[in-house]
Image (cartoon, rainbow, N blue to C red):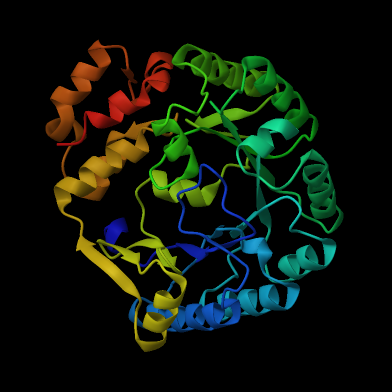
Length: 384
């Protein structure tokens, strides 16, 4: 069966609650205080039940719990949530990757122990910076001491696959500040680092400040210097850059995110979650109470669209080229039944001529060093 039409082997579950809203965040998240968390978990269980009744999972290889901050759940709530996941999705794959996002300061040993017992084997901490002043300027409520304590707690209870998120291009951030953050991050000797540039999104405090010319961002050259520094430092430390923003020790890539980059299907559960199942993309109702109300009555889907063959081909190229291993002609042909060059030959030839892509002898197209820096120009070529 075409991989896009098979039952997904990846599951994304959204927990939309946070201790506070960061200044740059446009995710579907809500401040925890006063929220009906237990009712949300009940609704999430109903969605799981109905989802697997329609498309039963045959094999699950990755689960990713994102947010929000899933680790704001109390230990009893976390135990309930993980018991639900195990009830509706098989957790018996020998190489199952079960990831959960966490915020430093929200993971004591009791909660981490519950998470380990419930099957979670990978943590992704939203650290963003090791500069306390910068953390305060972007609206984070943790400090570097919280980071060290949280990671130490995680290691103490047995987690050996830990990732942290960092950001660059932040207000008043300099190359020197970024370098110091990398010093601190690499001393932790973790398995994985995700390092993203700031994007000023609508409906955020930063967007309001940007429009008022009150957001002192680094210029493009300085931001580029930061990115090149990041790539050099991580490579020197022995990490493989396997995607534009992601670096890993051998065998420690984020297999769940690779699902997205290979354009493979995945279940999407929870308020505002996106899913891609049997050739259909859907997004769920976003608000907490509206989601609860809808999920108790049926599937809480806001929009659902069939992905055309043309759209699927474009998606395949745009997300696949984010991987430094590139896109393989044989994979394209296996998924769509036509040759890659027959569909996108002129675009590929143009990008190769511009030295943004390189064509290898084995029929693989991947970003050049220049293409890595100008990725959006490359991906845009495949949109019509």
